[in-house]
Image (cartoon, rainbow, N blue to C red; front, side, top):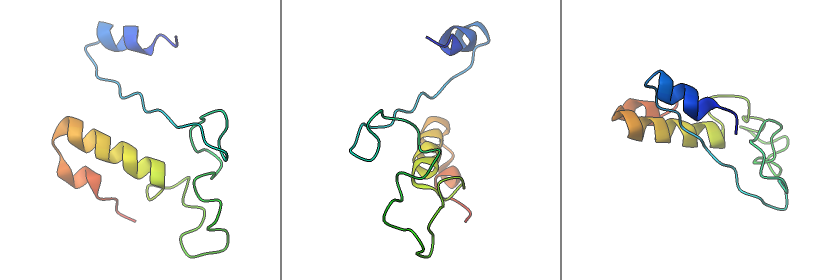
Length: 79
């Protein structure tokens, strides 16, 4: 327990807790901070997007935030 939920409750905030799935490329279910979601894109156009707003997991988070806020513009990344 990180204590984030208690802090959010104390300050009347909403926190989104995304989860990453356990896969053969990600056996511990970690957030994609090193590019495991793009293992087959090496050298291809768009490769190594994982640290950008166009990354697979970042786009998923922005769709979640858009759904929470009702701001559909957030769901479309500006790449």
